[in-house]
Length: 202
Image (cartoon, rainbow, N blue to C red; front, side):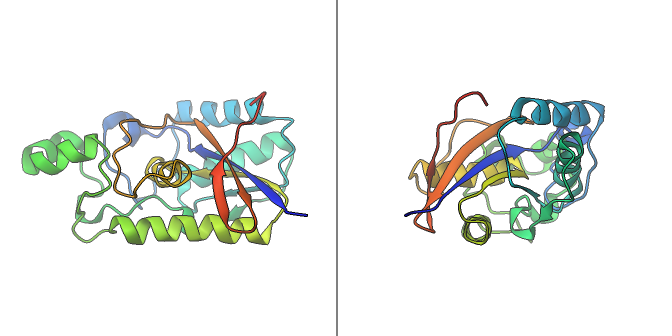
């Protein structure tokens, strides 16, 4: 019998830097009041889905979202996996996008498109980033085979996963942006194959 591991991948709640248009990357930024409210909304929306594990990126905005969900469900502390961190944006982390538009207009335009081909000096290449994200999901899925797992992570991470399950190239521009608190359901079968899943009553 093949184990089917189900993942619900959710973007963290809102931060003040999301509102201000500042690239966060690996910089630790806490949730704002709306972000904490969104975290409670995630818990309410997904209550009854019988998750056996909650895991998150170790970055504060994702971990805090996961903690709020776990607390709402009366669950123990969750797993934090470094492979689920946001892409490292190198030297431009912490830079407001309006400033970036003046200093690096071409890069700014491609970031707004969420083009994975962006070259972030001092940061991660798309291949290095995508490898660690998919390796993390595979490791979590194999370790907890047959489970339902809630994963709280980041927007560019969700882009990597979306391309993978849609069988698109890593460099494809999706022309979309996941909202704070938005969810993506995927499943792992045969210990390694990740594909889209369709769940009712999310």
